[in-house]
Length: 438
Image (cartoon, rainbow, N blue to C red):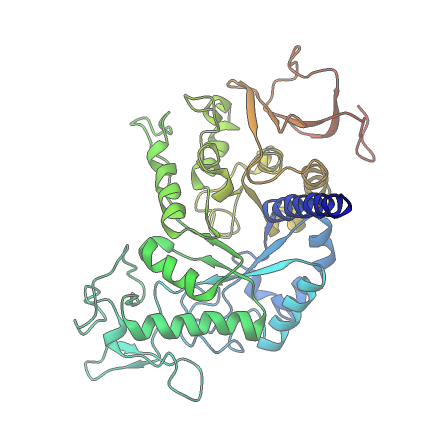
């Protein structure tokens, strides 16, 4: 009898431990730790960001996405050449990068490297006068490639011996032949070196449409990262009047298909939610609910594999390729920080736009209510001027210009955060942010 009781207690303890572990895995918040101009920072970007680690940790961040770490023809890092040469990065030296990663690890924040492997810039010309002779940045021949490692159908650079590209082409630089056995081996070795030598924990895959999901799966399996998110940039479907179509299933299906095909920890940035959200806050919030009553983006179908965001270094920053309305950014954060999916906070909004306090407050609400990527969403209102939803029956959020919500908010929900055209309520105890009066 005594033995049976002890066994039961051990079983209960293990079940509780597993539950806590699952919650910890799911409760993730990503932070993009750079913008398009960060490389210009005097004293080095890595050193600058290191001074902000404590503030980033206070915002409940669990993972930080850092810029491409290697030598690059373009200063931002997205035209990489000598992949092992970290000292040539415009963001700082290899030693400064390692110190930054260590500082984040001390605050239990994992570091995600921006991995640009679809294409690569060569150091030298071949006999044809074409830039297609690559150097890896080491004393040996690792990543020292020739034109045979370029996709055969990339006729501007290739010698025609490589395999056909498995994804979309990239005109500005040679497309890497990811079906080449040496390419697969040496890129996997480089990724594992970033983990073992630098301390990176996971990958953000740049321009992941440039190679197949099968190729991405191979690299993920070869390197065992704890966190993977891909850039599958697909803009919304539009009507003839220039407005987003009512049905965006094709766009989000592409994201779901990629995540399912790669498997493991692989997630995708939810471009569908970003597009619908930034259209919605401009008087069309009905777009945020699909025909089945679910969220209209990827988070409506596969929230555990969706990384939501308001803007990044491409869509916002100084590029502004697809920017969120600047006066409505906090409505965007009120949405993504209370909803399913893994939310991503952009550096500019937190530090340059003076939104740190509001973002921290929303992130704290998410944390103390245990909201995670797979949380249950119930949409109550999705009209032109108001969107109201409840998450896990614990947190309620409203965005939009409508002030009077009638009886939508139950009496046992109390305001926990509010700002221009948004409000968040928590069930239970009354919480009012410091300096705020209701």
